[in-house]
Image: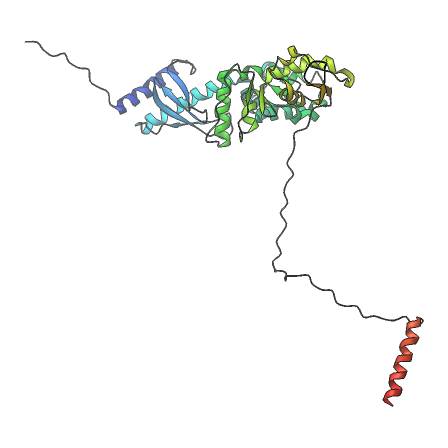
Length: 368
C-alpha cells in the first residue's frame, strides 16, 4: 500500500504579509540601506505613480508629499497588516524610498538640503547665496532640467568663479538648457517623471520617448514640460534630445561670430537628424534667426535652403494676468442716455438779434 506524500501547508495572505514585515525589519537592522534586490519600485505603466514591492508582494503605495522629492509611502490597500506590524512596515518602506531617491537624484537632494537650510554644504564648500542660489532653486523646482532663458538675466550677473557653486552639483550650463546630465539617464528620468506627476496631481502621462531616440513628435495637448523632464528640448512640433541640441549649438557657434549669416552643412544637421523647416525650428530654439531662400540651377528643380544669424536667446513668454472688471450693481437702462439740451443764448450784437426784435414788434402791432 502506497502512502500519499504530505503536501506543504499554504500560507495565508496575512501570514505572507507578516513575514514580509519581519524580513523588512531584519533587512534594515542588518545595516543595508535599501539596496536589496528583494525590494523593488514598480512604476505604473504610464509612470504616473508607483508602489513598493517586497519579493513581488505589494508593500506600500507611493503618494504625494510636501515636495516633489519627498513622496510618502502608504500601506498598500491589499495589505492585511494592522497595528505595530503595519506601522513598522511603513517606517522601513519610507526609509527605503528616501534612500532610493537620494541615490538616483543625489544632486537634487543635496541642493534641496542647502537651499532649505536643512543640510550643510559638503566638503566645507561655500554656501549657495544670491543669484547662484536663485538659479539652483529654479533648477530644483524643475527637477534638474530647465530652459536657460528662465534665468538668463541672473546668469549674466554671475562670475565664472561664482559658477563653481553650481558645478559641484554636476550642473551643466548649456546654450539653451541648464541640466544635470546623469539624471537624464533612463532610471533617474523614470523616477523624476513619476515624482513630477505625483506632485502636479497628473493622473496620466503620455508614453515617454524611447531611450536613445534623437527626436520625437510632440503629442498634441501634452505639456512641453513633460518632454523637457524626459531630457528633450521642445522645438516646433518636435522634441530633440537635449545633449544633441547642445552639440549642435557648439558646432554652429563659430559660424555665426559677429552676427555673420551662414549655412549649415548636412553633416551638422545630422547631429539632430532633422532638416528643412524642422531643423530651422531647432536653430530658432537655440537663439538663431532663420531665413528661407530659393535657388534654381540649370537643369534642376528649384531648391530651398536656409541661412541663419545669431539673434540671442528668446525669453519665455509670460502670460499677462487677466484683471476682471467689477460688475456694476445696478443695471443700466437699455439705449443711450440723451444729454439735456443746453439753453441757447443769442449774441445781442448779432444781426439776427435785430431781426428777432423786428419780428416781435410786428407781431405786437398785428395784435393791436
